[in-house]
Image (cartoon, rainbow, N blue to C red; front, side, top):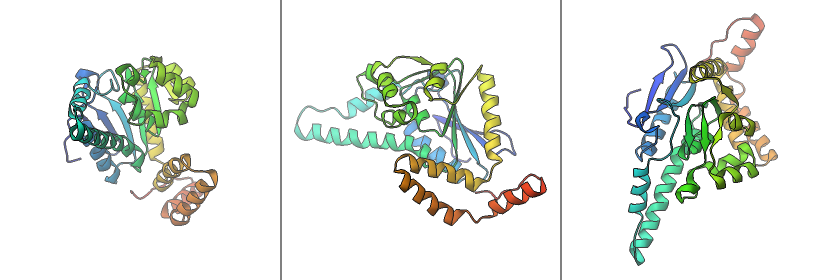
Length: 279
């Protein structure tokens, strides 16, 4: 892909596959992420989004865990940079902290901005920042050994990078409140019951293979329809039904009459595999 990153890496599933793996890459610390992540992650996502060979992105963690949160050195660095004792120094520190938090939020929202579907494959630990990340993903699966925690309240922090905004829409307001206030650990099976993940696989190996198969299946569908479905669902989540219907009408009036549609109809009629142009 050209650019190299320290906190993440990109691997193509195979030389002909449209599935690309975006991997959190600090396995020695359970993928607890440094501040560099917030610069590197959106750059990596943008590179994947702009690459016409990429159809689906699978987001996972190197090693035995998905993400252990934000590393403690980074938490300390943010606190130290924003500290101050008096007047202007304190005010400037707070302005700087707000700017830093907005920057971090934007890095996670990059998942939703990415046109290509992003599937989270979660094994082992997923807490704090890990939950922020997966709640922004389009589809979430986990292995049986996965466990989750909205951990920020235990660290004296109000979760501020997306969990409190996205989790209620996924698991319901009451469940999100309970998980966020207790910071309790919950299993992959409970995550499935809550609706946080769509399926629990028996092992890490089964998770990898199962998600690859699902991603390849999505990758065989008409690209404009896949991109449009993601865009319309995200837009419709935040507006009224009437506004959502208006948005999809506008979208399809510009995108519906495409070669993808002709290919899909022709392939169905002649019982052959369709060939779609890259985005």
